Image 1: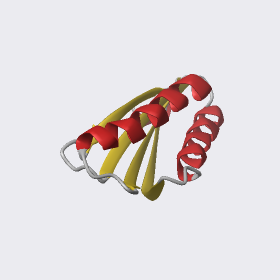
Image 2: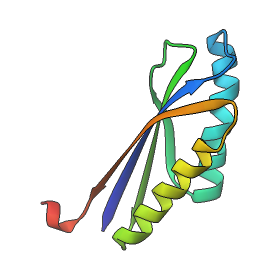
Image 3: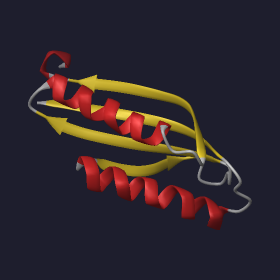
Image 4: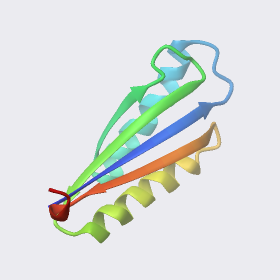
Length: 98
């Protein structure tokens, strides 16, 4: 079993309140869940209205499948015109990591 985690640090565009931030972040989280069947959550920068930290997690029997899934998630978010992807951090844990 392999577990992959992706941490996406985002700078949001024309957002002036936490309410506006939710209206940008919520559809991204929903689309990632729907398209890739991964676990997703806003995991940081909760009190900042122009920043968001989104965490993505995936589990599979094959390490390459997990890697491809996380890269596809990163591409989807990076392609959104209403935000800038500041950084993406990938982690993979497998049986050899005991």
